Image (cartoon, rainbow, N blue to C red):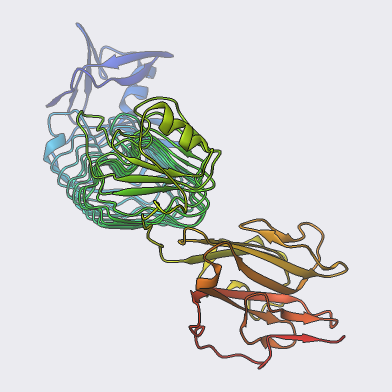
Length: 587
């Protein structure tokens, strides 16, 4: 006879005469099953009625205890001695469809299981099903499995690889936490994931997130310190944060990150303490970077804030090696954003409405000062500066307009103040690489993601009209853009500026031509070139600095556009074009 003792925290429920009872140990031989229930004991050959005996015997098959589940069978417990385990496809003519809660964990031999073969009838793997199977090195997850429960493979430290089929829809909290995985592909079928799914997988090197899931949960890859490669799919909109130092990629070994253009929100501590992280591409549509998102990334020096960003949270870039930063259209600077960085000056742009307490102070949140910051320039005279001596660090020179709120702050706290453009204003601000970003609204498609610096926005060869366009520039301290379009049934519209839509939305009207002009003090230092793909013609030649591009009087639609900014006097990129002209008119 074989007696299997179960861990005290494992509860196996069985049905006797309509009542649930809980097994503490099971004795199995070829003719009887003895189930111990506390101090009581039932035996299938004597202690139970015939009906109960039949019911009890039906719940044991080989080394497995099972029960009825969703028209099939669920494996509730494994009683074998480990090694290679094969789960049967059917039991008593019913398909085995589920591995139940704690089915292979918490038994005397869970650590001795080395391989598990699951049948193709399985659709669910329950919570903690294989938890603490520390010797498990191989398991197949069949096509058809839709659900992986929380902690299902937690602490499977010998499990180096697993293939998730494209049927999996839901992955529970901490499903593979502290496992030995070295790589993972999350399939397109996944629509739901819990927190901490791969947290503390110290051997994990690469992750391919193929699912277009809109939100990634906090702690998903937290503390995977050897994770050096990760890829994302378009469709991702949010990286959920955690204030408890277990952000999405907190403590990972990533060196370079390219985020998708669909991303809008980067949550608390998402990349905190990624000590090897050097470069981040934020995509073109991020609106909010939350608290400590990139804090304590000492190697991070290369990052561009896209014009879409409006809010940067507290300590978002504290403890990085950033020495230059351009904030695009950020509206609020929160506390300690750039503490312990290598910034020696800071330009507060026209878009900034508010600087909060400690917003431009290098005082560390851990105590002490970093005295690298020498001066701060305010471009907007109406930027509100929180009235506190700690908003701008003592010893920092403040530059701003005469009569500005920046000057009022300097007077109140006895700080050095220099008027913008005065003889005393000898401070030189760097010009960042000038970038032109633009996107178009397209017939049958809607708004595309942003294109940059000569990339195509729109389509080619699909005969779809452009209906609207938004254009913005970033990089130079005093450079803007204005543009206007020729619209079907309307003609030329008025100029709009810096990211505002020109054209129409929801009216089904084609754009036929466009003019683009650089503005502000630095406009003379650059040329803006643009060319359009026109119905029945193809690509036109480059136009520049306010020249017309497209057509008028023919009723031809614009189908695509490319825009690039170069230093004044330099030639645009060499391209092929169908027409030597940039604009044609029937008038």
